[in-house]
Length: 171
Ligand SMILES: [Zn+2]
Ligand SMILES: [Zn+2]
Image (cartoon, rainbow, N blue to C red; front, side, top):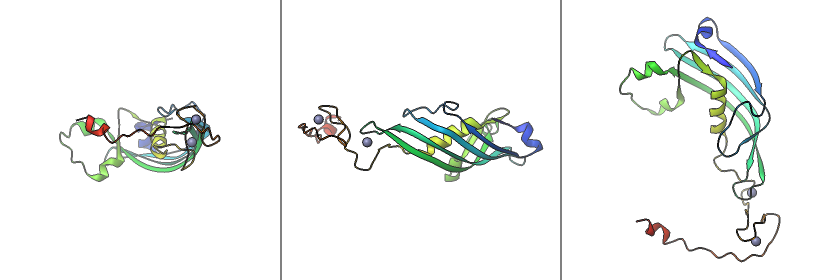
C-alpha cells in the first residue's frame, strides 16, 4: 500500500488491511509470521512542514527459534505507532543538523511518498525482543550430546571453560 503525497494533499487516508505471511519479508532471526498481520490507521500530509504523519496499530503473531534450545517460540506483536516522515531532499539542504532526543522519532521519505510495508517491517522489528528464549531458565542444548536439556537429563559432563584470561589475550 502506497501513501502518495499527491493523494494526501487532497485528503487524509484511512487504512485497514492485512498481510499474509510472506507478503512482508522480515529479515534476520529467521522470523516467521503466523497468520495474518492486521494493520490499521491513517496517513496524512502536513502542508506546513511537508511531513507525512502515519498513525496506526499492528497486530499479529510471530515465531522464531529459542536462542538456547532452538524450539519454536511464539511472540504476539501488538503495537501502536505515531510517526513523522520528512522529505529527504529538504533534509539534505540543511548541512548541519542538530540532533536532539526528539529526532529519533523522525524518519524520512523519498520522492512521491511512503510504502506501508516499509513502516510495518520497521515497527515489527522494533517491537520484537532482541533475545528469544522459550522460558526464562531455558537450559538450552547440551554441547556434548546435542539433546534438549529441558526435556532430557543426559548426564553429560561438561567442562566449564575458564574465560578469565580471554579478555587479556585481546590486548
Ligand atoms: Zn529454549
Ligand atoms: Zn548431553
